[in-house]
Length: 179
Image (tube, rainbow, N blue to C red; front, side):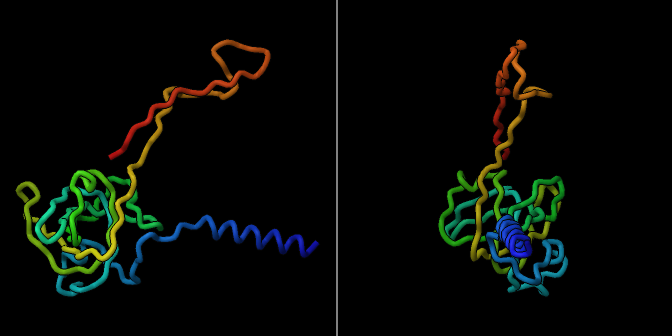
């Protein structure tokens, strides 16, 4: 009986370990938030960070691509978490050409890189201090797809008419791309 119990415990442990999501990008032990780098940029210069969020703008330049990101909290897999909370804004510079049509506003992106300093730019009429990150690795996340059920309540065995046998009814669903 104890061998069966032990093997069940081992199997359950392996399944639980397999369900954990590993970070896609490396996360440093000291990962300061955007606000900390904004308040004291000299203390965090040349520090490795892993940040992510929603792309606000991207521009192809002569020496690479510059992407402005609205920072969000990251999940354990380093994907930005959907929320209305902003942790600030930052700029990331990436070597090479990245198509601004693909790296479009509204897409989610995570970046691992080195803080190179700050830049003062305008957000409407407000002067904003952007931390600048030179990306070593990055990941553009796929667009989230949400399903909307048109039926408030549905039962898979309920049809438009009563049948004496189970009649499978598949609800009408619409798909929305979330950007």
